[in-house]
Amino acid sequence: MYLGEVRGTVVATRKIEGIEGKKLLLVQPVNKSRVPVGPVEVAVDTVQAGVGDFVYLVGSREASLALDRWFVPVDSAIVGIVDDVDAGAPAKGH
Image 1 (tube, rainbow, N blue to C red):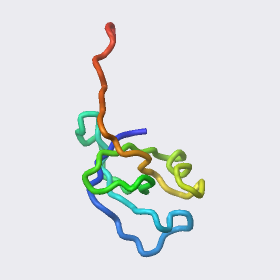
Image 2 (image 1 turned 60 degrees about the vertical axis):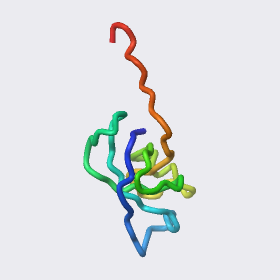
Image 3 (image 1 turned 180 degrees about the horizontal axis):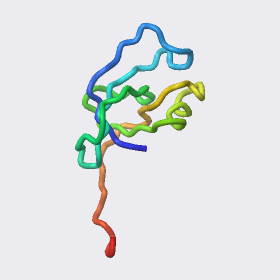
């Protein structure tokens, strides 16, 4: 799993079977401090996220398992909307 911020939407009039009716969103992967950590990507929305939301995503095989029809060929899926991140202080000796 990794964190991201929704930046926009993707409009696709034709989609593969299994993602019809699902929103495609542009997501900027970020670290726990919301600093960008890679290129913007397209993710399938499974939780009704919107532009500006702080979300967590799954990628690769896990992304295809997040959909109602498993093994749909997607690379990332939004599986939660983040309310807060509390990373805490690192343990002594780490």
